[in-house]
Image 1 (cartoon, helix red, strand yellow):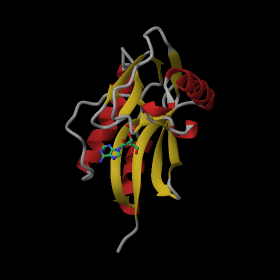
Image 2: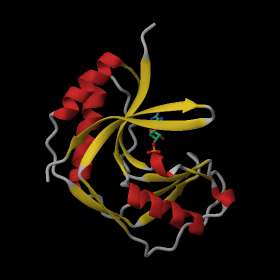
Image 3: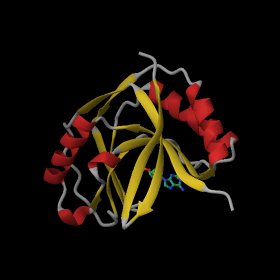
Image 4: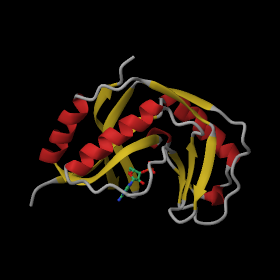
Length: 176
Ligand code: 3AM
């Protein structure tokens, strides 16, 4: 049996913003609202690859290394709740074109390599809480978390000792 890893491409949230978001989240949501995602795990998923072999991972990394996309900024100024998935998220009212193009490219390369891609439209978001299946009161609009993204990365996701751990495997710069 060959070894596989659960992998996904994502934009990591810079550490300073991770820390600020975690503090803000504690003020905005009660403990019953859902399970907070660890600061270091905050990210925007670009393409989920599933459990894939080392060979397929290498092929996708080679393709990622050839991507030439401009860097972009976005403002996390939107929040929402998907009760079915139990997710409370932050998003943006105006997704930058560079982000949408990058996600589209990675998702189509993943699909061509046989990684199932959800038919749901791509909705860039940072998952803040999981297990949020009951009604949640969302933060009033008016918040802004501006972020400059200068690279994207490949992560592995592993569930160990009751915790989900993400590990960055490789990263590639966006053009500045
Ligand atoms: O960015 P978020 O937290 O929404 O939900 C999982 C997480 O996304 C998503 O991949 C990210 C890293 O774990 N994910 C997990 N299983 C998935 C699947 N089968 C999935 N996305 C699509 N299909």
